[in-house]
Image 1 (cartoon, rainbow, N blue to C red):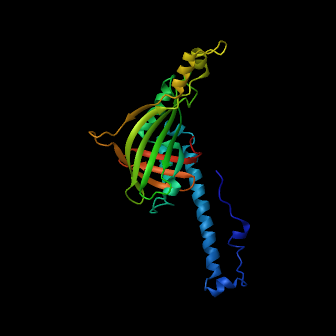
Image 2: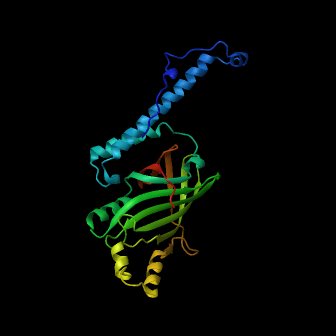
Image 3: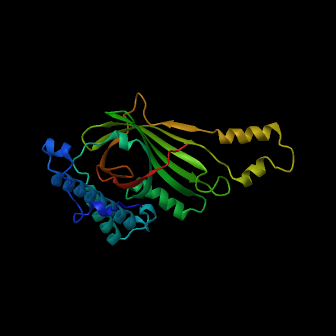
Length: 269
C-alpha cells in the first residue's frame, strides 16, 4: 500500500512565507497559519495510512479470519479501533461507499463457517468475497450485494467456478448506521471445468446439438430464492460503518455479528 510522503518543501523546517502573495495579505489571511494547516493535514493523512497498513498487516496471516489466536484477535481489534478513530462522527459518504470492496478479514460466524467448510471438505472451495454497493448519487440508501466466489474442484473452475449472490436494499438510519433488508439469494455464473466440458462434449469428435445445449444451459444457469415475501417478515440487520475512505471500508454488524475489513477492488463484471 502506497503511503503519503512529505515533500521536502512541506517540512515544517522548510516552510517560508512569500511576502509578495498580496492576495493573501489583502484578504487578511495569515500565511503562516495556512501553511501550518496544510502540513497538519498532510501529517494526518500520513498517520492514517500508517494505521491502515498496521491493520492490514495484523490480518495478513489469518486466512481472512479463519485462523486467529486470542492474541491476534486482540491485536486486530486494537489496530481496528486506531483506524476507526480517524473517521469517528463523520457522516457516511455514499459516493465513496459506492463500488466493489474485497473482504480481507472478518470475525462474522456466518462467513467463517464457509472458510471452515472449505478447509475441511476436499470438494468445496471458497474464493474471493466482495461487497458491492450501488448508491452513487443517492442520499438515503441503495443496494448492496454480497458476492461469494466458490467452486467444486474437477466440476467447476478453481476458486471462482460459481457465484453466490445475496442481495439487499439498505437505508441510512443515522450518521454511521445503515439498515439492511435482504431480498434474494441466487446462484449463478457457473463456469464448468475443462474436464467436465470434455466429458459432456469431447473435442475430438463433432459436438452434437444436444451437448452444446447442455453446455449453454449450465453456463446460463441461475437459481433464485426470494428472502422476502408478502406473508413473511423481511430479514434484516443493522450495519455500522465505522471507517470509510477511498480504499478501505470497516464495518461492524450490530448485535455481535462480527467485524469486517474490506479494501477497494476493481468493479465486478
